[in-house]
Image (cartoon, rainbow, N blue to C red; front, side, top):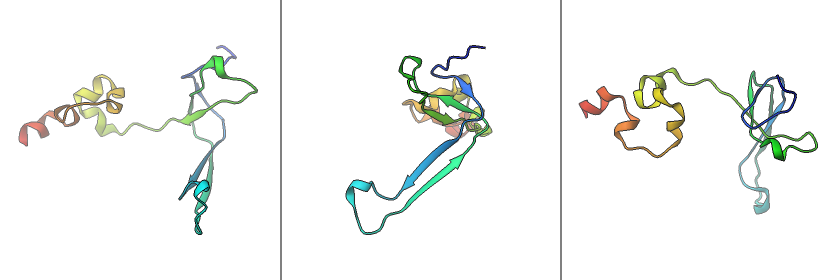
Length: 101
């Protein structure tokens, strides 16, 4: 184990604050909706490259469980990061579904 955090490291015990708002504050409309959710997710991932970590400030994102049904698609099961890439319609569906359409 290394004591230096790097991009992609999985960490535990960090507090995350997630702001939610209805409009950007620069618009200054009459009604505003603001909320800040504070959470301690079981696991988070470091998004800040190690060369950019200064002053004990890092960007984190919580890890969330993968929906099991996604892994039924062989295209996703081979590499789940494909879900974030451009693909054709056939790749986005289960083979049985595609053949029945």
